[in-house]
Image 1: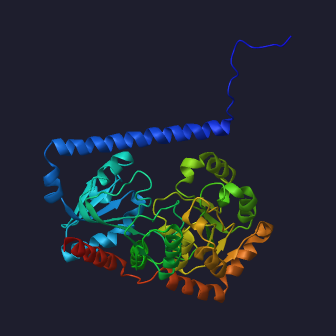
Image 2: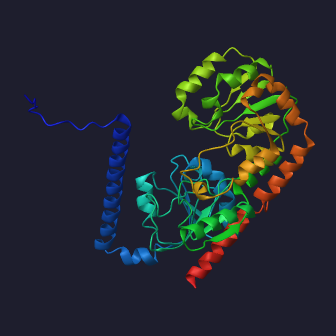
Image 3: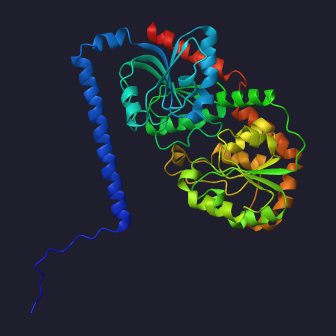
Length: 416
């Protein structure tokens, strides 16, 4: 006799697929909410009779959008340049603690907190302006959509590394990209050709935030004599130093007696809290270990004699500002979800790091003290650091003025 069941067979979904489907569902719901909100705001403008006035009286010439406090130093030299010229600029921020919303020292900078996430994008998507400048990638890819009432969108680089390490299509739909060095242009042009999209204006202006930090360093007292110190500055995630190696690296480093400043990536406190708690507990009694979570990293950079890192962009900040050697571990990353994954070449920053730093392999961990001191004595590394600095940080001290020059030139064309 053939057996049968009164109940239909159940569809089995493995946990991984279920998680993926749930993420897709959440994404669809969030997108629908965002579109509905944007449509409501447009209807509100239309039926309130304010649309015509918005396009004229409320039109802004220059808008700078700051998505978070970590980018404040990127925009500060630009704001200062506008202030010196007595040209008004609207500064929109998603940082509730932005210094300019608390105390604004400028006469010609108009700061405004616009919320974060969808609230901010709803505002940005309805902007009426001649020129918009931001570090935020993904224009017309994710929630941030081009407003038909904005004349020009400019992206400013917030690092001296490759411009292709954003998520896919991160820069594709900007009208211009402001670069820290000429070397960044080639890969952007390659992607434009591959994807059949119009060429953007690529303008090298220098690095605004490094200009700020360099000026601050000149104003600070030089560090007093101190014990030889290594700054361990990892990225976060499964390929970061602490996640991948943990005690295997820290045990011999602590045993060497060298003073160590461990400065985890800010995201680690959110994403890797159990890991940090475990490591802090293990080395709590080690007199030569210091953990640092300060928002500002400049004091740590100045106090250290050498850095250990991975693929974090802090490596280049350290080399260019302090002119001190770096030792890197596992300086590679999965670029398949980045624009760089579409390039048939190794990234500039990985090739350059091989010239400017010393690779630390796992088999070298037991002799890590010798590796560190050897890197500190290399004249070749010092010469290569100077070369890399000339490539990636051009027009030092001029970036703010050059960005302002560019924005004003774009506004004049838009208003012509």
